[in-house]
Amino acid sequence: SPAPLNVCITGAAGQISYSLLPLLCSGHVFGPDQPLNLHLLEIPPALPALSGVVMEVIDGAYPLVKSVMQTSDPNVAFRAAHVAILVGAFPRRAGMERKDLLAKNLPIFKAQGQALNQVANRDVKVVVVGNPANTNAMVLSHFAPDIAPANITALTRLDHNRALAQVAKRMDTSVSDVRGVCIWGNHSSTQYPDVTRATASGKEVLPKMGGFGGLAEGFIPLIQKRGAAVIQARGMSSAMSAANAIGDHLRSWMLGDSRIVSMAVPADGSYGIRKGVYFSFPVRCVRGGSYEIVQGIDLDEFSRKYIDATAAELYAEREEALALFE
Ligand code: NAI
Image 1 (cartoon, protein in one colour):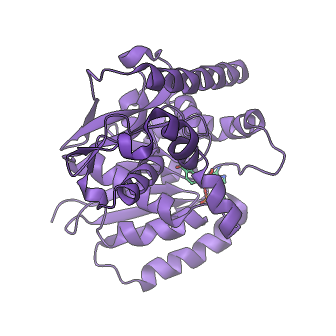
Image 2 (spheres, helix red, strand yellow):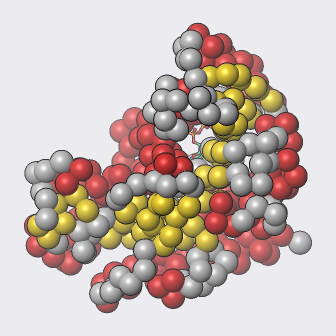
């Protein structure tokens, strides 16, 4: 079997991690032959809870899990990491604005960027989950200059999966028959879930979704506000579906995927999005840990308007973050 993969999870005692660990440990994400060393990071007050999670991982008797490390030191957790899943973040409290959330998370992602830069494997693959995910990824990359910016990504696969599932439901078909769905922009309520070119079993979905008017009033806000709807119903934020999306994101990236998926990646000027932000694009994952932004999509005016709005939000977040850097 191949050499073990060193997989670091931050916020490892939290609820997403609790749903994610079984997917990783069972081989569902990196493959049934890929052994793992787990590096679990938490803040000191959560270390007792983490030790309980570690007991449960051990009690899972997973043949693929070669070792489990628990620590509150990023320089230990990220050492030789091949994969880093950054879930831990300062939580949004009632009444907190996006700006406050950014200010609370900046020092976390600065410190973790510096630690990754010092001790992680040079080809480490990073997915940022903790919110504001896109801008946290930008901060992380800024403070990890020796890690290729393209190796740092943020999670929009949950939004992508939500869109896929809603299209399949509307078209009365399976998600595996749906093509051409993607998420543009920020993992926030300005995200643009795009189904204008999507097909289900080869049939265009736009007419069945009520055309542009139907999208604007129904589908788009449904996806944009889905996270809030889960919180409203469950009293807690999405964890099972978030963990599932992290697994999907990493499996597509590491093992390749014949479908087009959504990932927030460094903007490179494609579709007029300015460099310097992490922006969700439709991407094609090529086996072996590389991806490319899908090129040549002819965007209609309707889509352009939404894409410009979510880009504007990311440019503003970037400015706010840069102002806090010095
Ligand atoms: P949680 O509160 O259950 O767990 C977060 C854990 O992170 C806690 O155990 C906390 O102690 C830990 N933590 C906080 N600061 C840390 C630090 N500096 N280093 C290491 N660990 C730290 O939260 P949950 O539900 O697991 O969500 C985590 C994050 O994921 C939140 O920011 C949430 O908004 C975000 N999220 C993102 C999604 C996406 O699609 N991008 C989807 C769902 C959630």
